[in-house]
Image (tube, rainbow, N blue to C red; front, side, top):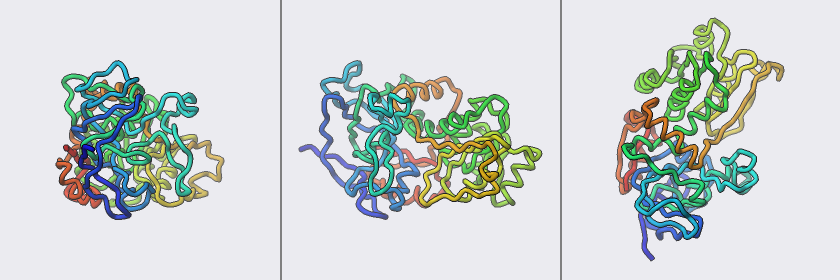
Amino acid sequence: MARMKAAIFVEKGRIVLDEKPIPEIGPLDALIRVTTTTICGTDVHILKGEYPVERGLTIGHEPVGVIEKLGSAVTGYREGQRVITGAITPSGHSYACLCGCGSQDGPGTRHGFKAMGGWKFGNTIDGAQAEYVRVPDALANLAPVPDGLSDEQVLMCPDIMSTGFSGAESGAVQIGDHVAVFALGPIGLCAVAGAKLKGATRIIGVDTVPERLAIARQLGCSDVVDFKAGDVVEQILALTDGRGVDVAIEALGTQGTFESALKVLRPGGTLSSLGVYSTDLTIPLGAFSAGLGDNKIVTTLCPGGKERMRRLMDVIGSGRVDLKPLVTHRFKLDDIEAAYELFANQRDGVLKVAITP
């Protein structure tokens, strides 16, 4: 049986490069030869044992590639065609999909943890940090890459761009809104871009890394707040003349950023939570107005499927957003263990790494 290189979860603290059989495909699947992929913050949660997956699983959920083989029931595509597929691969026919929530398409719980079924790559099936990846339900998930767009231009679409934009969408950002984005990693930076596209006129970015604050301004932040320069809540309330923000987007996944996001909301404002939390959250009584503040707390798992990918690539192709600056480092698949070491420890100003088999 033909084999391929893949980044495999061995145990807590160890993701290693090894060999596995090239995946077999069924009638509804496609086999993609991966040309570019990347490492996500969620992969680091897996590495650290903060999100449970099975040992031996290939990690990664952000593939750009070329169709190597099509299942017998997959029509409308051709072998050799450049495609992406979202980190979320809905079937299109489950109860969750037909209720309009394809990101939750799939099985129930695992190890006492509610498994987000629509997120299959590197979660419940082998993922994209490999030479090949099997795409399930290919008719619902393969999105052709337009001519003229490079791999790196569309590399953020499968997850980071979709997730960040969904923070603004789920938060129902409107024209003229004031928005605060907590943590300007890749997802937070995409949330800034999404809030600008949705019509926010004041976007306040919270971080401390100068390079991230600079990129945030490029993507649409009108103001930046360095959390090391003083109390974040006081700084944001001062910028909004005490009113607070209409929407606060939490993009880190910690108790502290969650509380701060809740505290800066105006009455009736919305906290849009994108972070992956590794411990229980506590909602502070005062910030929650004892439950009487008309506030909303919404969570989002990034939308997937081919139509979502098409729309995101249209945004890139139109020039409305340029996410190329988010790719700060490049590695070969052979060096993915070094890429994990860099990314997990956030060294050398890393935002996103491009991995090429």
